[in-house]
Amino acid sequence: MHSKPVNIAIAVTGASGAIYAKVLFDTLLKHKEQFANIAVIISDNAKQVWEYELNNTDYNKYPFTFYEKNNFNAPFASGSSSYTALIVCPCSMGTLGRITAGISNDLVTRAADVMLKERRKLILLTRDTPLNLIHIKNMETITLAGGIICPATPSFYSKPKTFEELAKTVTDRALSLAGIEVNSFRWNE
Image (cartoon, rainbow, N blue to C red; front, side):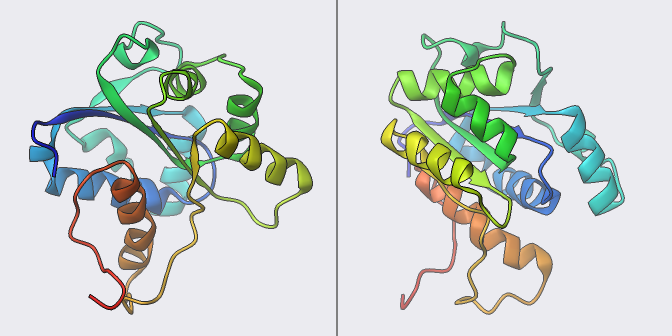
């Protein structure tokens, strides 16, 4: 566990898989003692997907600091900030492509660029299938640049019984990759 609370940013894009963002938010709340700040960017498309897939607008109810997609004054838009990680959950292929190309046209892509240039954790929970060669090459580029591709591919070792438990196998993995201690299933432990 971190010796002192950290700052972390979460971006939610319009890819299908709002359940992943919800479960990630819920887990962050359970481990809030590990964080000084939890910053969130949620795109307009992500809100629509959340409302369609989860039948609610509960993204508004989380006690995090929310930033508009064009707010380049957000602290994590600068390398001088103390934010240690950005998790994009879920990450659309369009967002992946813009990050790969270095197109910082909104706060999500700018924050991703900052994480890469500062050699901090950038974790992309990509959510699409099947993948075309452009997607695969974009994932390769992000990996070579120091980012982590963590596909939203659930595991079944823990024998999940609900959609939330299934999604948690992915989001807990992402948080662990960001250096956050969560009580998650570990194979053979």
